[in-house]
Length: 250
Ligand code: 13P
Image 1: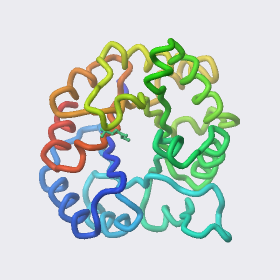
Image 2: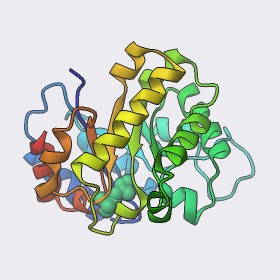
Image 3: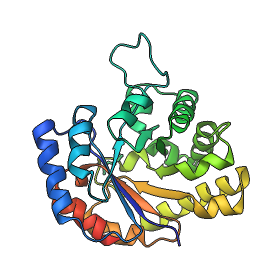
Image 4: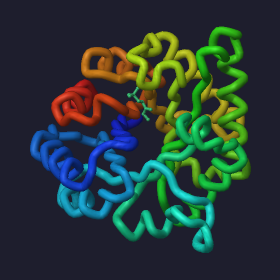
């Protein structure tokens, strides 16, 4: 049995005080997780302070992005080592908002994935199709391309440090969730890609999260699908009660 991993992507929300209130509430209401995992991904400015709150709890810390270089003249950017130094264990890479709004290519995302792994950061690697792509029947082709290019030259020994998050772009922030059947179909396909590129064992072990309008009322049905191993939550992770309900759905 694979563990379930629930991650909250706070995106561009919560200043320092708001971050501290949210994470303190989460910590105090957190149910027993067993072997499952919960990750919070606040904005950069709150990482260190949030880390101080969750240090003695099972909640893990992730960042939402990073630069692919170690250091240098890249005004405004943050490196993998900087994230490590404030307590991050995870980093989200390849989120559709980074791909579309900030023009991140598969090749750039691949560089970032390699850099994160080389610095012992675990990666939540996001893929997913747009509505137009789904409607023209190319979902699998798009997802395959993203997985193949994003994981290019990543050795099998490193795959245990990668979570793949399937986030159909049309379901992000829209209130339109993929049906459990639609999500399961793509998750199964992604697992088959991992099997083809690596091995049966690696395919069976990799965690594949679903993201896109996950809410307390749809979480348990999604999470009960055989190939859905967790959720990457946006809007519903900004209130402790709804995030806790999603965690409890596990
Ligand atoms: P929503 O849950 O708001 O749809 O966002 C999903 C997401 O993008 C998480 O990374």
